[in-house]
Image (cartoon, rainbow, N blue to C red):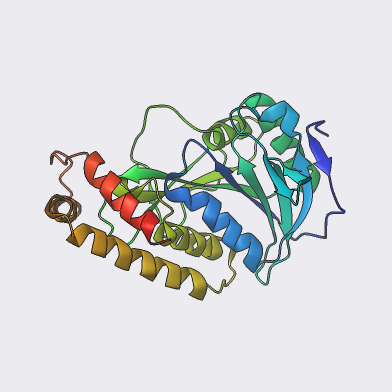
Length: 285
């Protein structure tokens, strides 16, 4: 049993549980993993059952706690937490959700704590939820890509395999690699968020992630609220793009790139356009 894990409540009886991991940090463009996991946690009425020791994993100078002061009194301090929630579902299996900030330190100890949890609860599979900025237009459905570790059951329908990548990673990918050594299968999902709006919350990405997780778990999730948010987001981005000729040209180029599947096409970074669009989106909040 890992010393990093502190139980808050008794764990309910779980059937063939899957552990969903969504960490806020390096690889979560548009906050897709965070918002999808929060949406599912509320829809499933998941209860907090444990948390990892933040003093051991989180740099509180980089992720400072916040305070609530009212009428001259400090009412409470809210600390960043990595928490475990449990939910019993209508489908053939139940779920655990591990959410919160990506650990700032002691990644190997974090992996060991998750491995210990998996062994204790008899987790059948770990699924990570992330997102990255992609050369994709907001006018097309968000695509989900996947990669599994060496001992996982392999690809699932609805997401294409990652064709190749070499570069820096987040803690969730480290979890994939290290848990393979302990014979625990991990499947990673990443949403491809249009790069020119990747710094703003992306409801279409969260919706796509929720849907593929629900399919994987064999359960139904009411997504009407998230669908409305995705529709509004599309309308707002359309309006912002319509006000800038360069933005409209960028989107058209991205559409042509996706249709032609030509990896050699040169697409501009769109950084200045992204700043303008994201300022517009913030003004609509």
